[in-house]
Image 1 (tube, rainbow, N blue to C red):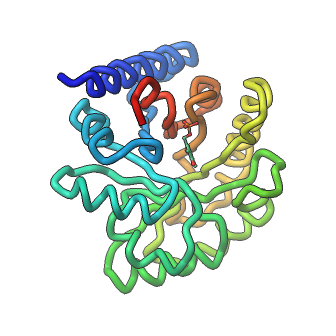
Image 2 (cartoon, rainbow, N blue to C red):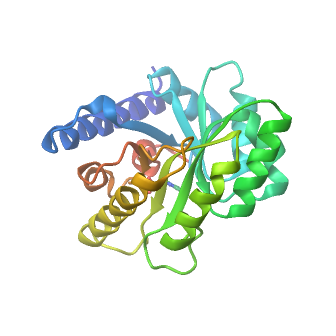
Amino acid sequence: MSRQEETIRQNLQEVRGRIADAAGRSGRLPEEIVLVAITKYADASAARILFEAGCHDLGESRPQELWRKADALRDLPIRWHLVGHLQTNKLRRTLPLVTLIHSVDSSRLLTEIDRLAAELQRRAPVLIEVKISGDESKHGFTMDEGSTALEQSATLEHVQIRGLMGMTSREGDLGSARREFAALREVRDRLRPSVPDRVSLDELSMGMSEDFEVAIAEGATLVRVGSRLFEGIEG
Ligand SMILES: *Cc1c(COP(=O)(O)O)cnc(C)c1O
């Protein structure tokens, strides 16, 4: 086993252990939480090691990089997640490659995904990105816009809304991250009773390398961990 492979396997085991512990402390089962390994800091060979070590959900924040890695690793049945901003002109190439788009941040994008999914005769599972950090530069819906988008989605037949995604501000401490995650869960709980039939808000995508344990404590079902998995790798 190469040194790189050994390090990645150890990192993965450590992160999985911390996910299980965080779940246990909240009375949850580790299986309720999907680890999405964000591979943007790593090359395709490092992503391959993660897959072979049992991590089958991989994510990228930039569509072009997702295309590149999906192509390089097309021999593997990877479940690809797009977690960053998606321009509509990149949609056609992205949609057939991904299991879940976490980052739907406008009504226009939602409508375009539905239209293309209809054309390609496939379903398109997505999450609605909600602004939780008060950081104006971040993409995402405000609470009110999110609720309007959910109402409008009643007429969309191919896009499948599965839940919400949130990003914390990078500078915050764990306490403020936890409050932001709790706020996302509360938004979800508030919207849930009135969502259209085809919409589910079961999934909460929140938590990254620095704060995935508090995200799990607040109900995350998908954690997006990048840098921690590749720590100690020569880049
Ligand atoms: C990069 C990225 C992550 C992973 O961040 P780390 O702090 O490296 O774990 C998660 N989500 C999104 C949207 C990202 O862009």
